[in-house]
Image (cartoon, rainbow, N blue to C red; front, side, top):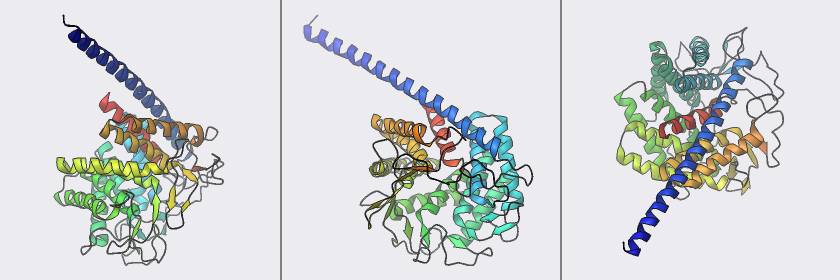
Length: 424
């Protein structure tokens, strides 16, 4: 045999062996990642089952402080309850554990009985601990989470009642919030849907009418609803939201997300939110895939990598992601909250799946190592709200509250476990 042919065959065999070793190592890494996140998901859900059920007033307690003390007289927020509904519904859809469906049903019943505004439609921002309406304004951000949670519960339970409520809230958003002239959705309204000047998610009266944050969660909510309700208008609204991100919200220069806008989509801030960047990177692709448009999927995959690379500028050497950066003031908020870390885990895993570039997967796992080292509360349970630049927990930050929920960290575990299941 010709020596060159023998060398060629040897090199091919060596390459195959190397590929096999690489695949084997990758398989072991993914197996370990899945195993650890499966344990963590159970830990998170166990915390909420053991500590947050309100046996007196129904539903779940509205607040648990940093020391683990439940405040049974605390208000109960629509966002918190909708996120609890989504988390336990999604956990059931992943694991088929009956206890999770039972908790999802509890959350659904509370939202149905107390959070839904039966007179004017939509949901209240909050109710008091007995379920009496407290903050009755209609924030589209809260309505989006109601649609998101209800849609996931429909998937888990098959409930036609939940499906009707999800569609009703969706239609309330279109009827009162959709901007027919400029596109997109205006933010805040009084209980009876009259426009109010103050924006809960924006800087007061600085002309903010639309926010990236609300549009991001409308995108995930409408995409989830499309998964259980095949409606032509809804399909077009998801498609339009993807377009809004492409044309208005994603900066063509930096690939970061622009956070605040006036009614005509003029930029009203110059702050970078690294956590929202990486969250949008994978949620946009999820929405595009629901539309089943191959050309759009290809375009969004490219955009997703660009956004991920932009978000990576907020990574610290320890694997954590900083919260945000004020460009005008050149000020970095030297804090790493729980939710950007959870979104980083998913977002970089998503980038690895798109690109097959190992550094993205390594970053996802590195951020999980950061979480294990600094964010897991090994004494009380669940995750700290965040840590400062010396890795010390943010003092007096609630464990459970209007914003602190099992959604980001629970979803990170659920999403990555699901993705590993599909590829293993």
